[in-house]
Length: 446
Ligand code: C2G
Image (cartoon, rainbow, N blue to C red):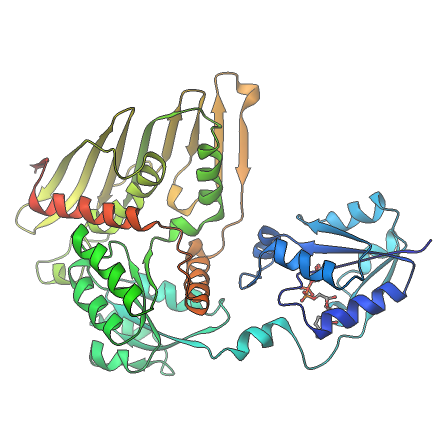
């Protein structure tokens, strides 16, 4: 019996895929089809896959051409599979010519002509590209601009910024708008990275104009307003999504799942530290568009705390802030949160450097994420008995920003909010800002 193997993502299964599978089957008597796992696709740069692994497997199964379907999860797996299943022929489309010649050491390699004129990318692109407008003075705007090119189905068309340094970096193909209103006329969706106090007004205008909104955290600095804005977005059938790039890092997502499944027992303490230095403290004028330490970092530092310990049971919140009174600028802030069965500390700073790690302690063990934990690609689960310790690594591309943009575009196209940040977490983050602003539980030093 001649065994044939072939691999693919098979997203939005189309005629080209089916032709390939038919010809692959015709090369032998038994066809094995390897369907790529989501993580594996991410590591090979395919981040726009629309269907889940199960949907893609089902589509391949429905062709009736595969005698066996397997999942491709890691680099080098093809060699393993060929040996394990006693494969005689490896085949793949001609777009891969030469790439798999190394498999000739294990079986025969056949490149089949690719069907012209059809591809998953084209099917995805048939939907008109989402025109994205970028708004704000924070240099994060440029990171989003650069990362958006990795995401299919989106194109940055306009920018509105009062920061001349940022505008210098934006190429002339992108329209430099003189006002927020004119930007709204040039796009379908906006990414806001203006200072938090401008968010509410801008979000309302954008939603009223029927635009989707991705907004750098916090959505607003008052929990009631955030609740209202989510409601407004629902009424207008647009997506409102909070942006914290860490939430889209695969390692961070896996870490949450691992802890929620009880790996370290009950969580009793979370210590989260996020700091960065800046060249010089902002002047009073600059404060109008410069983010303070609390604004820039607190949402990220609070994210694992609210996502793991919840948003309803937090009984107390004490904050000490090293505050530059003259410049109205917080340099270093520590927030202590008390839950019925757990405590947490979020420590953030701008203009202060500390070990930016995340430690989550439980009754059976703890999770350690080394600095800078907000760009997580690696973490360890540690136990009393060191031989039980485990290390986890998940490739992170573009600090998570491109995954976040991809999630935003997917949400827009499916009109379902697929945000990795739950609404109650967004509201609670706004609540922390509100309390801080009102001086509730706050001790200022410096
Ligand atoms: N294909 C084709 N004609 C098309 C489109 C795709 O013959 N118009 C073939 C591809 O060459 C591939 C298979 O259909 O053999 C699956 O295509 P994709 O889902 O795009 O998967 P791909 O990224 O090519 O993955 O490591 C190799 C991969 O797993 C192949």
